[in-house]
Length: 127
Image (cartoon, rainbow, N blue to C red; front, top):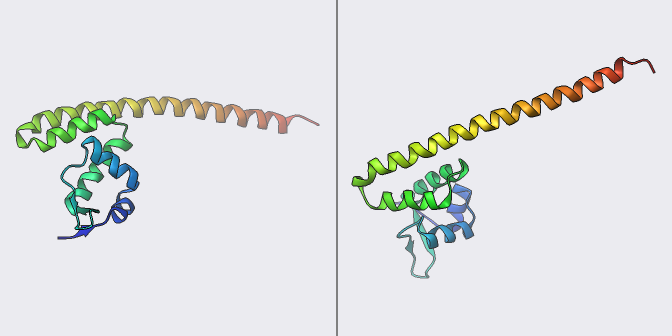
């Protein structure tokens, strides 16, 4: 089984070593092995879990909800319906955020059009 140092995991996941420590401290990472020197040693499963956490974080899931998701995952298959519910709620939040961003993008595009019009009018005026 492949093992990874904290530095390798940071490189593969994009999380800083400090974030890995923080995630372990707050319960997002659980049962991370340590080598005889006390350094964390990550497995492929740990890396896969971190990639899920990255997705949740990048899509705006609050840390407390991520912790709740981690707790449910640790509690086994009986919590799958609860995990689905939590992820569906997050999916709805992501959809709402995307819709909000699209509205903001339209505002930005309107401003771009306005500025292009100003330049066009300026270049069309005789000097």
